[in-house]
Image 1 (spheres, rainbow, N blue to C red):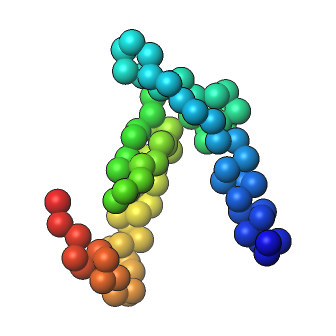
Image 2 (image 1 turned 60 degrees about the vertical axis):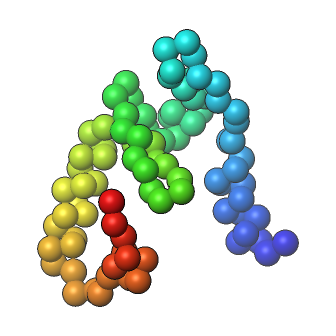
Length: 87
């Protein structure tokens, strides 16, 4: 296997673990994953097409501010996938 692929697999999948929902519908994430992602008490679950991302709430709002600014100043055209996006 390509060394770069192996590295990325280790980074992305190395801490993967099954999560069970509790009776209140919450997921219990391993502390290593919470620490790596910098998650505190309040988090944002963000849908991304057929996947989702879990963000620390404050980091999420900061990222959104940066993304809005980047989009306002960007000269790059939107990809076909984004042009076809509808909610």
